[in-house]
Image (cartoon, rainbow, N blue to C red; front, side, top):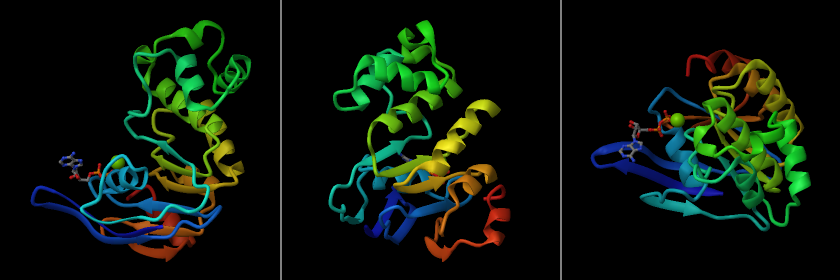
Length: 206
Ligand SMILES: Nc1ncnc2c1ncn2[C@@H]1O[C@H](COP(=O)(O)OP(=O)(O)O)[C@@H](O)[C@H]1O
Ligand SMILES: [Mg+2]
């Protein structure tokens, strides 16, 4: 639960008094134009940034998985496999490699330093680390950007099957359709509404 969140950068007010309740298994889409504060809000929900007012009330057993738009959750100095192993508690290497394989990292790919990966490869790795993290609330900031069609389909399938709660920021109508959200939060005014087909048309615009 997030209550009364406000954030400004200097004199630039990004949003004020945002309330958001994320129930177990609920699916919420955040939409808004560039600069509307979507990433800022997700960073606060993820605990990466502090709000100026308000705060978070974590539910019992909450385990957040955060996919950052700029991949800053990955350690660029470590290899693909090392990033994977640190994302999960007691993950066996063979299991890590199996999941990496399903995210299209095979053979010696897993020993590449993360720094040299392409944007799409970093996206795939970051999403693979979420899969092994046993998170029950995913905060996803434009997770299908940079993905080739085959990778995107894999990710959309995983998103559709995920049983935990998801807060998704996306301009990708297919990603939103895969999520099948029940609510939408429009930034920067933080107006919340039940999802309906008219919002589907807004996704690409906002
Ligand atoms: N660390 C920061 N310092 C100053 N301004 C920032 C900072 N982070 C974001 N902003 C500004 O806050 C606004 C919202 O950014 P952001 O949350 O990334 O928007 P969105 O994800 O909706 O495109 C933008 O105008 C951006 O330039
Ligand atoms: Mg953003």
